[in-house]
Image (cartoon, rainbow, N blue to C red; front, side):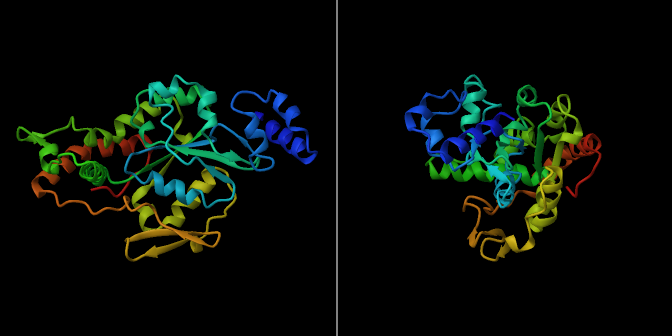
Length: 301
């Protein structure tokens, strides 16, 4: 409601060409500056998100946000904010957080994504304190593949920064046993993280997107998200085309074509078969626990 009132006020001021010094003298509340009142698109304002993509890291969060941004009634935040999982950002307050959101029209919903929220112990409680009825989006992929993708991202980042790298087997195994304290493995224990979220939100407020299916066939998963967010169906099959070079779907919208950044979809390293089987065996019980929590199953090995 506050966003709507501010948007209407800005519309009136600009429509009737209110003097700049008069506009600057108005107190529109925290998060709005004199420059904001003069420069944003007519009738827009910054709102706290109506929906948040909470994770998981290397689960397809960027692809989901980019594809959702096709919808004319979605305003997507440009960067990962890390407001609810980083103490130093959370200490800056909700007004600081809202200021990082995009300008949106009253008929639009604002969506932000920060993959680190899903594995944060504090994020669920903090998000509930902001909005207990917020709709949450969680995109997950096969947890074993997610571990390898997590390693791959760190591997290439270290190479680019001229830092030493290790073979994935050296991180997955320590003293002959699976290194369950390895962060990439910890992030794939979906049942443990989901249990924490369900302490603060009912399952009906958390929509799980199948990241493996989104990669293979985006439209059905996005149509489910549209329904969950109460958005009119606007995303169509014509919004996607398969890029043979990259090996995944790219986006076609408003006469433009775009693909995800080149850092996405990097080839995974070959993993020792015995080590891979150890990892899958360890994650299997956690996967089944997760299925029970969310009352659905996935085609994870």
